[in-house]
Length: 259
Image 1: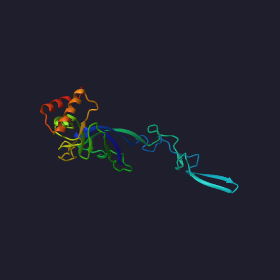
Image 2: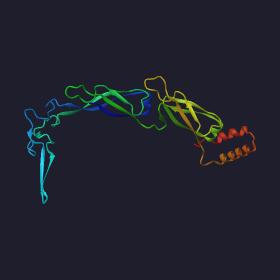
Image 3: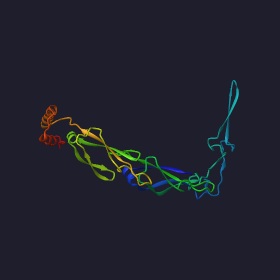
Image 4: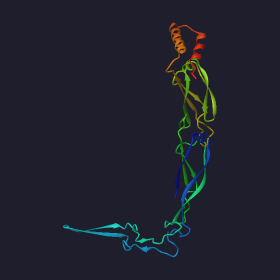
């Protein structure tokens, strides 16, 4: 029969593909007793509780008459026989549990819940039948930065209020290194940038998904005296409809995150 196991991997491993060694428990017929569970030279005995019938009749008398009920013998579980001389090798089970070490090749682009099939590595077949297959179900851990949607990746990028207003260029981590992302002047919170081909590869394909980056603008909860002064000046200039070249430079400098 077939076996099923779970394998947990990181998103980076799903992106690149990975090779893992796993230990697979499987049952094998005991070589000492041939699967009978009996010590050599012994046979099974009649169950003393049911006399070999496999059933026990219970009789109860009451003022309304005699009632009988039949239940399966608990000791022999209905077989009528018990093993009083169990095989010392398998403890009377007839099978042994073994651990096989197998290598699993996980393809690049695998999705959560996908299964990798390893033929012939399941449980041993019965009555001369071939062994079953092993199915390894892949589980992908949550990532600190990226959320996966199909073959696409989603993430957030953080910029200051001044950087969003004035524009900037920032480094963006991807699963394949660092990319430059240009933030145009006047970018609004929630603006989504798309990096083509920076998502997850598609299994058995040369195509890849995209990386979508949602802009998060950090508005400071507390302002320094200089920041407040410059923002008030900006508000005054804006309300008067005037420009301010030197002011823009000072605002950018003042609104940098404080170290």
